[in-house]
Image: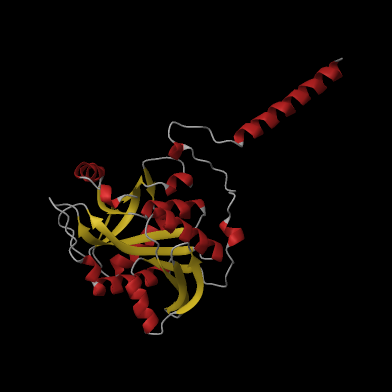
Length: 281
């Protein structure tokens, strides 16, 4: 009799365990879909199964300055080693040399969603250490065009990061990446601002009140990718840091482009600095 009772208890426990396992397979419904985070690392579409692993170095710079990549290409500094294919644009992935070592460089994809997909495929190819460089709008007066900003955290006002990291207001950048960037900047006496950035999906909805709220949180810049880069890199356990330069100005009564897109010397210098920094990660 006692044996039967024990066997029944064991059976009930197994049924209970199976039920718990089955329940964990499903994401709980939340008030807002964006909050329904699923920690399951396995997805239907797996970049590691779709992307061909390539014989590449572990270092890669992602830059939003396509014109500087074109200059490097015209100077015979680049060799194409792969391609990031999308439905709208194909971005060549190039290899170059920095301090005698191989490093990749690719143009960034505008926006959080495209940036996340690009980073996913780069990681699947074999890259492990990244520096991202580009421009950002400035939210506070006194930040000159070209002044460098090292974001240590990003306000998550986009959608991608919520699919990689549990919901929270902000996401931090990799500490090792930040310390490496700061070390190089300090050694070379390069002035910079270490601050929080605001990542948004909607640059046509950067309203006066939204800007004021972000400034009150400590944001000095606004862009469209940082939170996604930080989230994907954390999820995939790779090192990524970002360097921004002050571009257009949103701190005044009216928006001022400050003709940041024509600042070729600044962009050129930042790309070279990013290559050098990435090699130290």
